[in-house]
Length: 233
Image 1 (cartoon, helix red, strand yellow):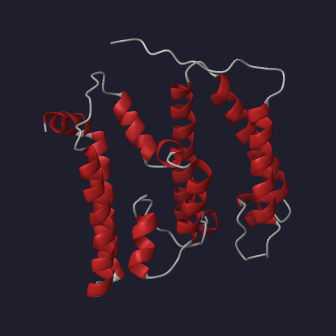
Image 2 (cartoon, rainbow, N blue to C red; image 1 turned 30 degrees about the vertical axis):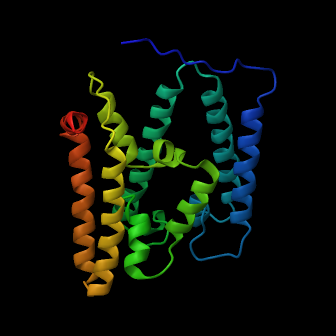
């Protein structure tokens, strides 16, 4: 296999990436924190200790600045991306478990939604209403574009782990866009069909959970076999 060299900008005396990332994150979180008070503040520390949200803001901003610097200068950004992506996924699901087992204040809205990325769009279509997750997703897409799928998707980190376990690399089929489009149409069409047909939320939740479990099975068990099959199409 041909060796791939990762060329990164050398470190300079002025960490522009860190400064920009710190300022952006701190500014956005400050706007969120100073907005109209709600019974369930956006910042996690503020939910448990009044006033501690102001401590959380610089801590998160410092992490953003450090991570931006690391990604801009590290010789192997693919490895660092995988590391912080796994860390993010761990924190995400740990917070869900804490919300279920310890205190529902760990949950963003107090109500658990299935942690399946496709439901960010399918859920509001089924309910016929906007949701916080949909707005957050769209805003994030504006800021980072398609990097959402390779940096911020909490389930995508599992896919990354599964891919890195396979030593043999197989080129993907040229028909991959067709498969992706079919899945997208199926998810959106399925949510709309469930809504128009009047299926209960319980039925919709079970179907969504099944869809999520199938995705995990594909990643963990048969990812390599599916890639081989697609390559032969």
